Image 1: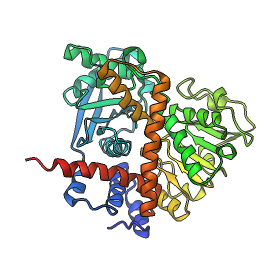
Image 2: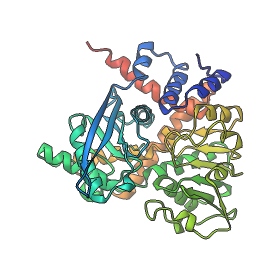
Image 3: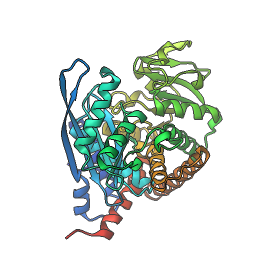
Image 4: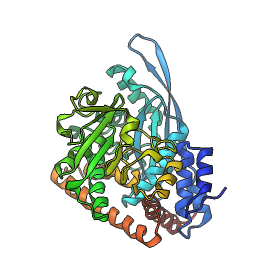
Length: 430
Ligand code: GLU
């Protein structure tokens, strides 16, 4: 069945058929490809990962028994440089989800014009059910299982859901011990004391805030007169909330897994601990009103930022959205059917691969710092991130106006044309 760039019954029909992450990722690729003159064999290659490593990870538990986990590393495309992308520790991790997330990383790196391709990996495990020692053994053994496919010039993992700087430190140590030398550039998102970059943890939220500011400006809206609701109060949601609040926006609602808090006069995001600072602190915060996560999505605000998990904006929840603009903080929060609803309702949606790309951009800065063994100030990191985000935003704006498409399509057009041009220049070997 074909998808039609003008929109679409076909899209809705196809969407209802399969809303798996990989199906969504493939449809987004095909949609963007329609606007570009790209060799069909390149598109065919980009529909599939280059390689997916599936590994068994046996881990001794604290009680002496051995639990066996399944881990993955999906590598999508490396035409522009080494594979890059996060590692998730989450019960729902599957091969297909890693493939989709790896595809999104290819586009995310390309839209930011970083010299990286896309990868993603993870282990199907609930990290909260493990002790620190069990998580350490799991991280080290997983590193050993994927050691031959990662490396500072091959594939560079980073934190994602359920992993953190400490996980990256264990991976860096396990890799370095086996290679016989200290190799900080094998992962990014490390603690600064072993070669992590200043500003890396706050970077995805910072880019969400920058892009929110820019899209409001594009539509001639004043940030200081803007109300914002943010689903998810992890690193992305909390950092975006705090910066937007600093810049004068009013954050009226935030949430975590246990529910949302709402104050029409504005919350003080700095007084609410993020999920990383104090798990599930949002619901304990004293406020006039509490809401469900679904009610948060339907609030009458200027900007809605889904910054929790994927697939929350669906054909059921998207029609309820009253926000004027959606900025995607999480990876893949909008299903294809929901994207169609927003297109029909003329609600601009700034996509994840642009909005939260600050994370991988500062990962790139970290990798450069590790290679050069010379570290940057926080000011330099934030200044360079601001400038990279503005360059990407301006490139996307140009395509948005050239093609009269959605923000998502415009972003994909920028990314895909860079990847396709690189394939074209390199050609097919042999
Ligand atoms: N996991 C993050 C993302 O989804 C960062 C990836 C990276 O820094 O390599 O963008």
